[in-house]
Length: 357
Picture 1 (tube, rainbow, N blue to C red):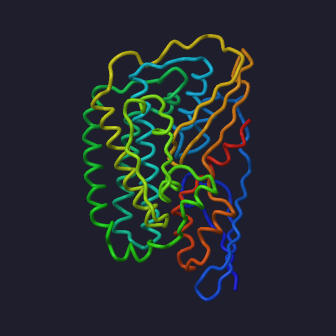
Picture 2 (cartoon, rainbow, N blue to C red):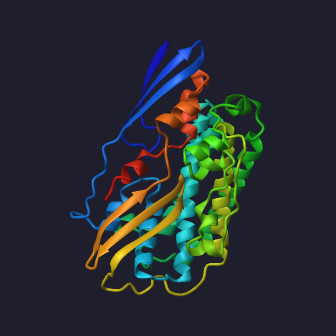
Picture 3 (tube, rainbow, N blue to C red):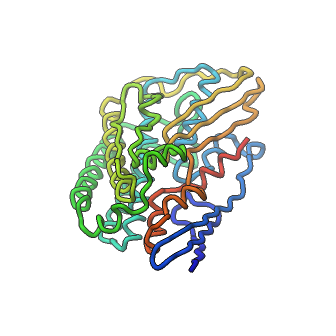
């Protein structure tokens, strides 16, 4: 027997339609055919500022994209930004990571019918989004991260509020971890479900949380540190089992680590300039940079013709595709299909940006 599911977006970062055909024997999935229909996002820099166009590419990884692009331009210019700007960039991207992870966790618990946990996680996601807003200021004034540094500073009046927010959200995440990590119902729904071995993760060239949940030590912030990560390094967090449970626990622990890292940056925030002096002319050449986005390595390559940035290319971390879906769903219980796919935290918005030239 086969089932055809037309899946609707599960997150703000999901663009385009999906088609999943499952072949089932009894209650087990024997084969899966997955298709994602994406219309490549066209480059629109001729009608809008380039950085604004990049910021609109993904609603959950906006600042990671702006950072990767800015670092690539700075590499082209051989430009070093002030330390204060580097610390604030770290805080912005870590709050973005925590916001993304907590949103995915809320969706996972909701999918399992555990609204008593899903609802608090959704509130924590909103709290982190508020913290991100405290850092970034008014969005109608343009993107915060730009080549050379930042567009706006963090007012002293917001530092105290941000510190209290970090402490409160961290405390509540600890409470959730303590309550759910050994809960029998959660273990029954997630352990040995949708398992992806470290060998398979390596073969699929996965990066980020999906790879780390399968035991791979892969994190750009640690392996090739950039900006403030050269002095404020996060803890490498991995899980070994590679199942839905491992991915769930990893997202919880990484959310906590992002808040810890942000708190360290806030406590040690340097004084000084916010931006470097950007040259008025660009050299002919190329620049590239890779950052650790919420879903893994995100690389930007930029090209300059001596007058302007004439082109750029985006390489996001590998996402859910036909072969990965087949591996994750093989021999799984039919009732767990959507839960397994959601635990991979796919972002088709980032996949669409990968077509930009």
